Image 1: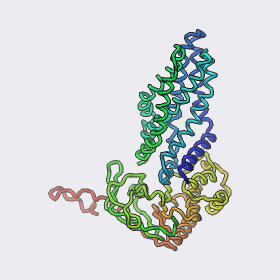
Image 2: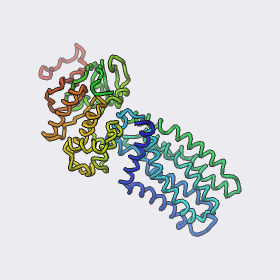
Image 3: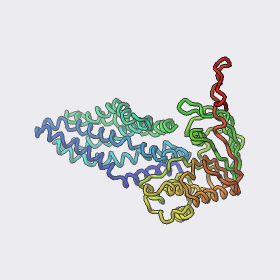
Image 4: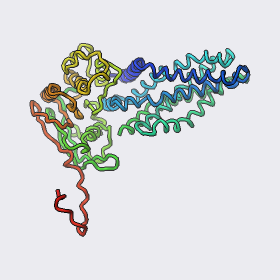
Length: 224
Length: 237
């Protein structure tokens, strides 16, 4: 199996598993939609308020929904011994992790981004802000997932694992949240959103390069 | 990399600790082509940990590994080894065939006629009728048979000549145990080698079978100082 084959193996494997376990992905998506749609109902129909909080609420909901999916990233594979088999196979573990992360993004983050235009309606978001919002989510959610994967790999098998993942991730998630929501706000204020998007993009590239090898190393330590 | 070419593995002075407790120290063994090394010892002696440490899944506290005379890192064995831990190593929501296909792709044991080879391997381990059953519905013994199918594929493909098996027969019925014996024999005859942690006896067939008592290398409890109360005679070893 080539390097690309190893990556594709992990990607296809996790996509197939997600198809067999659709409830997990729907759970994340349901949480996202529910969390977002409760705000307009609770706050009332004042357009200015909704427009003001919309991007922030969608980002917070996306962040929390991602955290909901994180524990499953490696836990199941650890419990049933398939993680051991992956490591013992001698295949490049960082590529396996990369495949798993791309699969996780496709299953948990992409549906949530696809639904965002609908939720933007609920927040009376101006039409020109929606592409910015989507762009920010496209660039920001891989960062959330990548950082979460490192935290998840580090805390694998610990009893307090999920709690620790939350504690480890939240401070790292703050910049994503600030720049993600900030992109839309900047646009609403008549500024260019590209500075925010560029920073998110830089973060995504850094995480895309660093998260697989770091998480792989953390997994090796965790299974010992 | 063929099974007939398994270069001798030499482990010298291995020591292993788990949870701050020394499991064994000074454990050495050699393993050549056609040999089966049985790891025996009571629960907690460190049999599973030794298997994992050989692949770098657990840290060695001390010791060296050499393959064909060259010192190697444990992780380097992974490419030549096929490991089965005590967990099933199969996803419960996938069918037996899907699980085997995934494992075989990772092991590099299916080439070309993938599907036919998978079916043949499942037949061989007696899971012909369970091919499309979700693995979580299989019994413990059937899961162990599914794990054996990986080894059957490796035997056929002549790759990964070092088998590391952790209690492969714990849940197998008599027929399954005989199957394991046959596979080990065929593997040894093809020039492969295996290290098997087991409580069940493996009869010497084609393979040269040796036993390694892991607990024999456990650290003796520190002897009390000479002036201390003498140990009651009944407790003496």
